[in-house]
Image 1 (cartoon, rainbow, N blue to C red):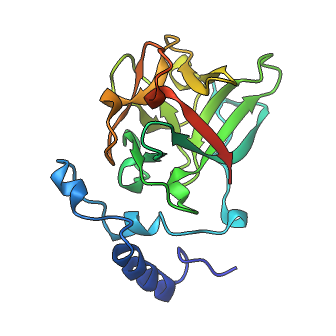
Image 2: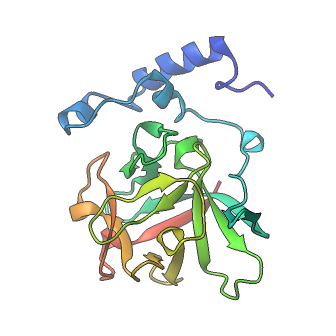
Length: 208
């Protein structure tokens, strides 16, 4: 199937369409961060679900874990209704997780959930990005969450606090994933903070 990411003519047309329709605008520069380049804007153009592949299975001690990737999904924050994303749709290790306007088919906003075979607790997950094939990694309270190569360190294991509350907690310290400072802005960073259940800690998950 022909997709915008694999056809030069489609890429050019999609870039013009993305800019013209407001998928990115100079507000990102006003927020003090670099504007996404053309390639980053294209990653938020619709792609076909069949073209998506999950990240490689995590490797621990040189051994590939047995399990499966579920998804992909999108995660929408309840405060401003924006989606979990990677800044600039980057594929680079250490790129930060942010919130951004939800874009239908935006591949950098799609996430796979890893379920290790026999881990005994279905809610424990790694969160792998469909575009970069890297996993979310937390380093502690109020430190921006980033993406790195997938492992099973506690820094990368997240679990659902409650199916009713829709909070996502880290196995590192039990704190919840939230929008830093409760900001409604695009490019606001994602951090860990003690769980309190306010709207900027609430994430609604949707199957792609």
